[in-house]
Image (cartoon, rainbow, N blue to C red; front, side):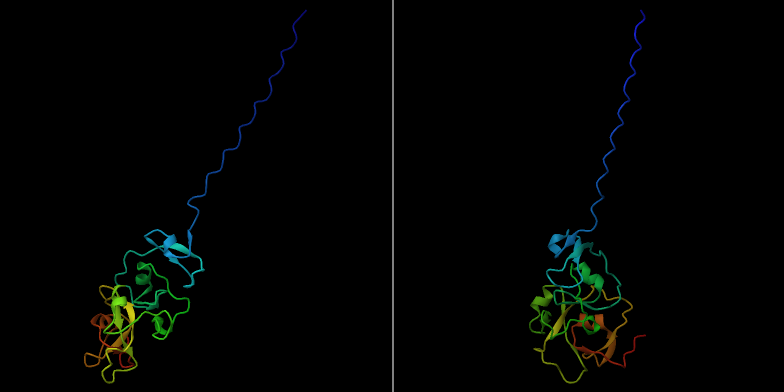
Length: 192
């Protein structure tokens, strides 16, 4: 007799699906303070509350010639502009005070006087005394607010003010802050 037919082999199994790759980097890192971020980042938050969750954001590396637009930081210091604020790993207040300058009356504002500006200078700041006008001499014990200003004032500073110490001359706010003299806003100093 003849032999039986050879059985046909089973179908080869199909290969398993390749595993999907992991997500790239997982997106921005959530934080509640700078401690949760790398040294070259700051925790960008909508306000200064401890429980507010922010996002680690790269701090700027150069704030040269950034135009003055004051902002009050969560540390109670007024910064010349948001770039300097973030360069110093700070956040701005959720509600900006008038002109962005920290209010002398607000709790948490770092105030200083001509005699006692140590806490301000420790933050590389200058003690600023802005007045309503330039009447008589202001007592050296009068409180001011701490400002952080650029090493070199921008060439085009749109906020001219009256320097009380220099025969009421109009100068950029940054230049007056640098000279550490009392100053005032003045309608006679037009920005132009």
